[in-house]
Amino acid sequence: MSTTENCQREMPKYKCHKQVHALKIAEIKEGTDGAMITPADEGFAPFFVNGEYLKKHSPQVGGYYVVYKDGYKSFSPASAFESGYVLTMGRKVTFSSQEHTTVFACDDRGPGNANHLYHIAQSEPSSPLKDTLCQIISFQRGPIKENGVNGIHNEDLLCIVLDRLGGFQAGDFACGENAIAYTYIRTALKCLRLRTEDRKKQGVEGTNTKREVVPTPEEVILRYNKGGIKI
Image 1 (cartoon, rainbow, N blue to C red):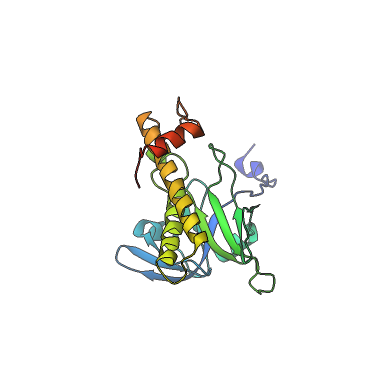
Image 2: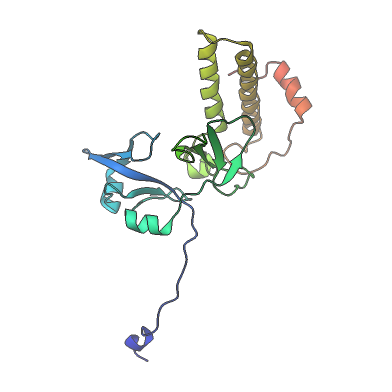
């Protein structure tokens, strides 16, 4: 049978079911070693891409800057992307009052049973921008020793909130509620630092390996009260 005869029937069809992160491109300003891309999506600052990305993908205004689950960065023309993907908000996360915004967990849980990708969307019922994406929060994926730093950490977000509350407390909006919240967030940061230090001592920090000895809450409190760590 000839090659031509082999190609007479239609090839098998496949349906895409991948989840990706993407931003529509509003502007591209090229420089000597790369370019600054300005997203069309509100709430996202311009970001840098290197010359290798430009040469390989040739991004165009109106298309999409795409990041795959494994961290690979690509570009997709608008027609191809919009015909193959729809915006998904994922699992709604609710722990407190969120009158104007809603948080969604938008990826599968990882090896530690935690999500890595979160979307924050407007939820004001009367707003014409209801359900519009405000921000993407992307956490570290995989051990740093194996994957490098590719996202933020829990401590980063806690530090931001701690800094904001400290600012409020030093200004005209100081209050008891802020003071208590500040104290507990600082405590949370100290406890996470204790965990990191203990993982380092057991030689498993930066890996997906569990500690051989995991302290109980009571043991953590004892160590905390002894001033075992400072931030």
